[in-house]
Length: 61
Image 1 (tube, one colour):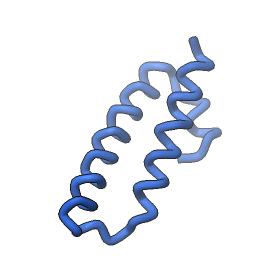
Image 2 (cartoon, rainbow, N blue to C red):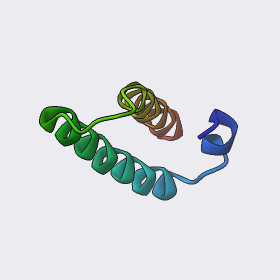
Image 3 (cartoon, helix red, strand yellow):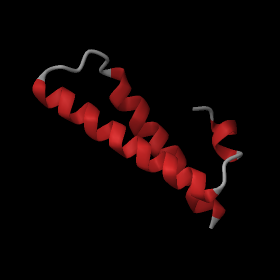
Image 4 (tube, one colour):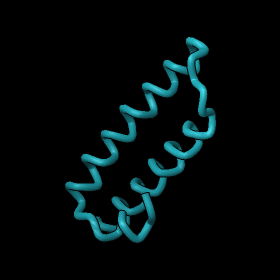
């Protein structure tokens, strides 16, 4: 998701989005561990988006 779109969200929406991202990250880690991960770039994308959301949550405090 674009940074502009993330900035428009409220803190509660960001927290729920963060939870979804963490679930996706867990699923990707499990796929990697079992050798089923086809799109390895998704791990990096999710990790960076989690960092973006955490940064915005820190700014909103």
